[in-house]
Every structure is written in C-alpha cells, then in structure tokens.
Amino acid sequence: MSIFIDTSAFLALLNKDDHFHQKAKSTWEEINLSEDYLICSNYVIVETISLLQKRFGIDALRIFENEVRPIIDIIWVDQTIHHAGMVVVLTTNHRKLSLVDCTSFEVLRTLQIEKVFTFDPHFSEQGFNTIPELD
Image (cartoon, rainbow, N blue to C red; front, side):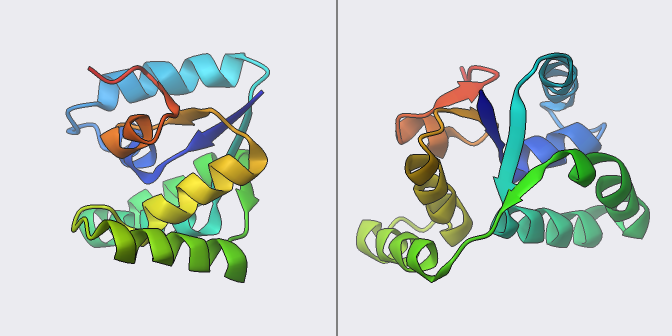
C-alpha cells in the first residue's frame, strides 16, 4: 500500500519542539517497519526544503536530504495536476488552502491513494485517511 507524506509530517518529524513530534516519530517508525510504500510530490519536497532551511538552517536540511528524502518516491507534478490544483485554489477562495495541498489532493486522487501521513486537517476534510488519525 502507498502512503503519501505531507510537509506537516516532515516538519513534525524533524523538529523536536513541534507539538506533534512524538506522534510523528512513532508513526514514522511504524511506517518504516511496514511494507508500505512512501511517496510525496516534488511540490511537497520544495515546500519542505524551503521551510526547513528558513526555520532550522542548513543542518536540518542536510538531515532531511541525506536521511529522509532518499526513502521517499517522488511524484512529479505535471502541467495537468498543477492546473487542476490552481483551479481548486482559486475557486475555493480559501486563504489557508495552499497550491501544494491542492496539487497533493490531485496526486492522491489520480493515483488512488487513500492514506496520508500528515497533521494538516485539510486532508481529512477532503476525505483522505490520515495517519495518525487527527483529533
């Protein structure tokens, strides 16, 4: 089974001060012991890299690039998915719903992936199963 991993999970996993760090760490360990296949989009990778570098510096970015990213398969957002995501951003008129999230939804639907490792409630609002379950 495939599990999509979102920026919020990466950030919680790598930031020991994050409110969700312990949940992220235990979920990450469970996923790595399973036979699940981890994927994310190149947009999620870019967003994660940008936030890690800005908030925590190059050392955090280096850990992500050398220890985390190599075990994630990257799905490249193409023009069709980008356009579909942008249409959702513009039509929902929801300030906190990002293009990265909307393209992630499109990738999930296109690949028929139901599980997402995330702490972002937008994924459960869109009907995806989040791990861990969000309260």
